[in-house]
Image (cartoon, rainbow, N blue to C red; front, side, top):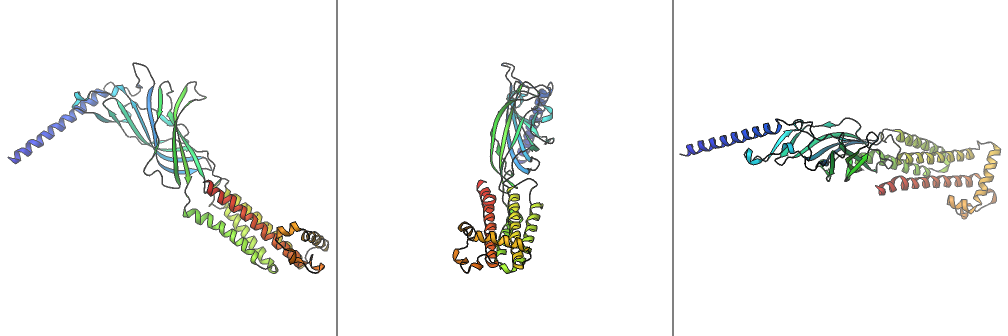
Length: 392
């Protein structure tokens, strides 16, 4: 008895499945028999433009190259519209309320990204069609679009890049685009760039080619570069090393000024190499300014040390040495110059012949050099590191 029940149940399921399949086959025949893929669906009653709802789901920011103004992304473009040619009565087809159709077999909006640089890579998917004629198509697309943003604050920059999508041939009289909220996919917030916000709005614009207005969806991605350990080891640590070593060179006694000169030359070479290395982007950034300022500060320090060494070894012409001592002697007598050099009057008090002697002049040049380098380093840290980090 149980075996007979199982057989009857299997036959019933088979018959039901076959019946549903036959109804679906008949539905496809009825829908597509006289369907024209070139015919744009339209409301025959009020002749209003076809309403197409658009939304963009960002899957991943693949790369942003600010040197050429290009952004590569992977998105899902969702389109929804009504096609009266694809509507049916479910009761006539065994209560089938929805079907899936290949996008090539029905009319679909010719949506393109207007600010694309290279042809889009579109993955063909099935459409979801309901009995009311409502059609939904979600297409994964790989894009390369224009992104004219400033990377001056590298590696702390925040940028905004647009994605403009609309119908390529149908103007606003034929297709009226409605913009839904764009979202971030599960894998969208990974990689070098962090997605801070996504804004969407409808734009109606008249282009130079055509007198009719075209509606489009403008999606703006607000991105921020992630600071990683790679930036720490490739940018921050080398810059901090240059700053610390440049200040430590002034711990070398004035009598060994030649060591200071050698160390300064090596630091200038290191800063110049870092500025021109592949670690920095090809466009102009605050890091380039930091390196340039350090090269200027170290070059001035080397020049001052060379002047000290020339005075100590009496290798300069007598007239030049005498004139230098006279002018520096006047500076030593000025309260303003002493404050800049951070020398108290008690340090230079003594016999009149010592005030313009080599020892006093060397001390003055030494203090001026270290204060100058420290001042430039402080400004560098504030304007090239701290403020960009706060602004980001």
